[in-house]
Image: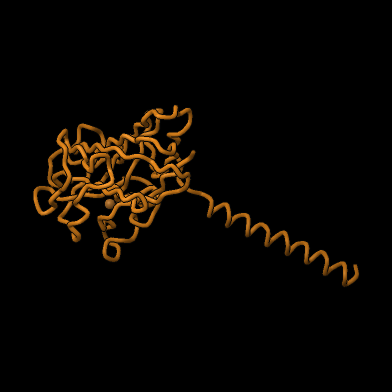
Length: 227
Ligand SMILES: [Cu+2]
């Protein structure tokens, strides 16, 4: 075999190797938690109901001690994800079960409810527009969509409650929880709108802002608004 042919074979093998590396890394980058589809079969003008929960520890997987959100899929199954397909320009009625303990807020401003319909949340049946986190159990997490001006503080449960949830998520309703309900309207423009928790709840990470605070399916995600 001549030198040119050997060079040709070498180049082809190199190209295949580089191709494989690129393919595998792209597949890794593409892998993400599942997106729950609340837009399929949606009738324009009808509200969409969405049920979420927040837990003090997911209880399984690579980060079993991390705080997390979970989403109830339309089939009734709880899924460990924070990614949702939502119809544009639609009222979303959220029911959120909060199972985590809390603390006072470093920034009291995120105790205010805004951007929801009426600028209120319904906390265990009572409308609330501000949670003073220096009182009671404090705030556990927030549901915040900065680009849409939405902030919903989640009043915590008593971290020392006898029935505090300490089982792998999802937490059952028999364990200590608060029920927080609110509604908001998705924007008219399709696109991906990031949402996150603004309580630095990443215990053990710098200023509490690492780990679950920076990981999709734990304390942040996307509203994938589709038109
Ligand atoms: Cu949080």
